[in-house]
Image (cartoon, rainbow, N blue to C red; front, side, top):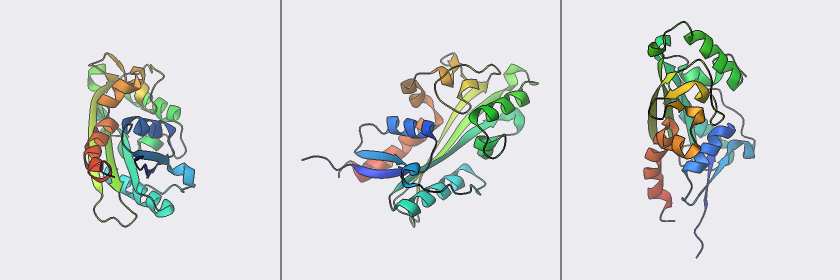
Length: 205
C-alpha cells in the first residue's frame, strides 16, 4: 500500500528557504509547497520577536490555503550592533531591498570594528500550525554562532551567508555544501526539533 503524502504549505516565497526546508524534510511522507503556489499574499511582519512573526506568517498561509503550515522567521544578530539587524534582517536596507543591498549595508556598518569584535549569530524560530485557528503552535528555535567577514565568499546559500564565517570549517556559510550547512545551521537545528514532533503526527499515516 502506498504511503499517504501529506501536504504542508511553507509560508515563504524565498526560494532559498524553500529549497533548504525540502532538503531537510527528505524521507518523511510530507510534500512541502511554497505559499506562492497558492498566491498567498504576504502579511506584514508586525511582531517584535522572531517567534511572533513566524506565527503571523503561518496563520496567514493556513488561512489562505486550508493546509497545515510551517513558517520560520530568521535573521542575524551582530553583537557590536546591539543585536541588529535582528528581526528586520530581510529588509535591513529598506522595504523591497535585495539580499545584496542588505549584505552591503551590513558590511559597511561592521567595517570600522576589528575582526575579533564581529561576533554574530543566525537565529531561527520555526512554527507548525495544524490549521489557521490552532491555539498551540509547535515552536522550535535554533542558534548558529559565527563571526562576520567583510569580503563575501561562496555561491551557496543566500542572504548573509557569504559573510558569515564558520570557524569549525574555516569558510563562510555560503562556501559550505548544502548537506554540511544543514547539519550546522540555525534553520537546520530548528527543523530537527520540529521534526521530532512532526514524526508523531505523520510517521504513522
